[in-house]
Length: 187
Image (cartoon, rainbow, N blue to C red; front, side, top):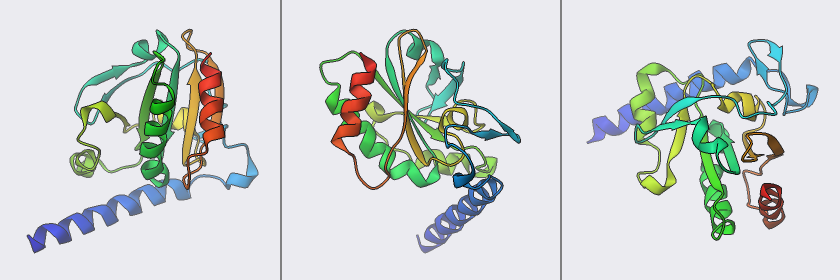
């Protein structure tokens, strides 16, 4: 039992170091708008159309852009430092959307995490199937929407797949005014 604890700590330390090394390559957040991610050295704005993707959630279920394009959606993308707050934001936004048919998609931006630890990282996500999180290991969509600097964002896409709003969310608290703004952007 004690050996497993040390292995987990060592694995978490190695993942943290690997992700921090990837983040260290990014530019200073004050130098540019966080909505302009730095992908392979080229500054690109957040896409106005939802990018195409085919990713798996933590339960190995396929999630594609087609499911999101059919209805208005709020896409929440979190990096390592925004992961804990992302779960709270997702719950709060889903509560505000109870009578609505809108979709809330949570995406974990895991670009830079070592392949060796993917199984371990996957096991750390919620076990509840109603709180599925899309795992973006290669930055296919998460990094393009979130950017390099914002630890947690919410992007509202209409049923036509077009961006309606983009908000950097607080990792400390869930502001009711921000939740209302996101819900209003869906309509």
